[in-house]
Amino acid sequence: MPSARLSVVVTRRLPEPVEKRLGELFDVNLRDSDDPMSRSELAQAVRTADVLVPTLSDRIDAGMIAQASDRLKLIANYGAGVDHIDVHTARQHGILVSNTPGVSADDTADMTMGLILAVTRRMPEGLAVMQKGEWHGWAPTALLGGRIAGRRLGILGMGRIGQAVARRAAAFGMQIHYHNRKRLRAETEEDFGATYWESLDQMVARMDVVSVNCPHTPSTFHLMNARRLKLMKPEAVIVNTSRGEVIDENALTRALRTGEIAGAGLDVYEYGSEINPRLRALGNVVLLPHMGSATVEGRLEMGEKVILNIKTFDDGHRPPDLVVPSML
Image 1 (tube, rainbow, N blue to C red):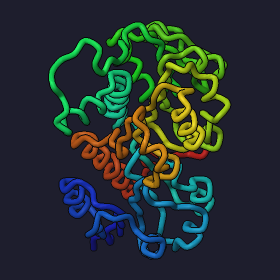
Image 2: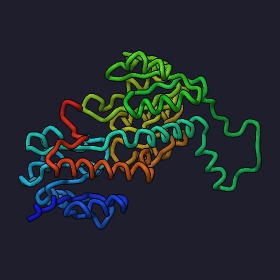
Image 3: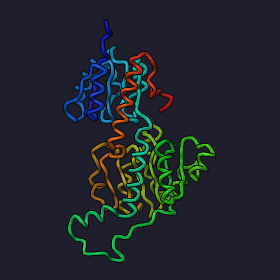
Image 4: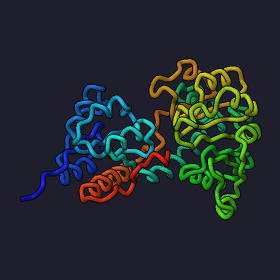
């Protein structure tokens, strides 16, 4: 007699091929709506599932984990970031947590370069002129931006995404600098032509562009606080495609309004989709709706990793992308 299939609950709509494959392999409960689950719906899911497949929009804190039944043995996150999951509490309850690392590095790095170019070359302002029908031809002094070749790029967080940004920025002729929890190997630095800064304060004070590419952890919360933002040069810009909580958004808004910083390109926000209206009103900011990893290819690869993690677990083995507290 075949064993019962794993009960898998998916909290958001996923690409159709991913949902189809999940349904072929497991007893899957798919989400009809693409809206995030409510707290009560999420609580029901952790009480009934063997495996939960959440996304970053699902807050799985200690209180939620306390409501889980003994059935729940794996949280197979659809995404690389796990700051929305209390991994420590999950492990204490015997629940494994996996993620999908490495899939979105190139996609997010592409978007980072897009934001750097958009801010420094004033692309949104040009787009607005065209959409309003106010363009009357080329002019020598119109919408003058800045050349990025030769500029110093300071990368905050030199993991997969940070290194992918470095490769792209170097091709544009930018000078690569970085601050990281651990210094890269000498040969890796040489490949990028990268300069390591042990002091984040000293790095941000000398950069023309700062790119935030580190994860959100307790130690990186407001890493770019009001004091560090004041260290930046008035003509510098900051770009964030990582997690909004790494930057003090209110302090950033003040710095942009007063001209202490020339501009910003943001794909993520401290309070999720609740964006400071003063920030949204500024002309020297490019705002995107968390699109960094939004490619068809990337989303399918994320789904494949989720399925592999669940299938490996179902076969009695350690999921290949297991998240352990010491990693955080």
